[in-house]
Length: 303
Image (cartoon, helix red, strand yellow):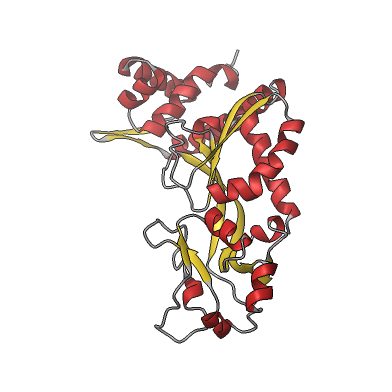
């Protein structure tokens, strides 16, 4: 009676074959699988014998897949990827979003945009224990100082997953009280006669050319003198609210700061992107997934 293909290509042998193809050597694959080099080698030889094909070229420097080996590897890799995804979905369908979720972002975005919306998220997911860490510095996600971050630059660490949330630009804002007292600038050169609040030069600016307002529409190489420098966007926002002067701020302020007026809308400052970032090991976390989807939904509403 002929052997059925299923008995020749059992899961254990295929799993070992996949690990060897990924590692490029019996020794490294054995370390990953917690098996001896000889055990790995025996399993591969048995698989090759049962299929009557050679799956690897054996070289002094390691192993290279044969043409037949490449064909088997591509199929096995795809099957394992689908199984892994199915396993994650089955686990998630059993699991309701619950447990701790620590979110970090900048002081300005956290204070002005995120915290007013957190109540809605917590009402929807009452079993998630939410905490916010507002910090303009780089909180280390790999060391689990926070679970997820909303950041305004791509992550530098290779083991972090990123999802693009939105693109932003800087726009110019002033309070109604300030404009009543000092007038509304109609042209960019009018900024020469206005009180400008800018980012502190001694602090790490979130984007290049942060203080473009000092030169926008003015005489080349001649910078305006600001009335105040602040090292934090939220501080700039509060100073503008108080009527002290005009400042450039990210355009998410336009929906939040209803008491501010946008001036010179044709002048757009530098653009930058916002990312949702989390460690690889939280890729299948239900808490992270529902928070990401909540953010995407709320950000879509601002358009």
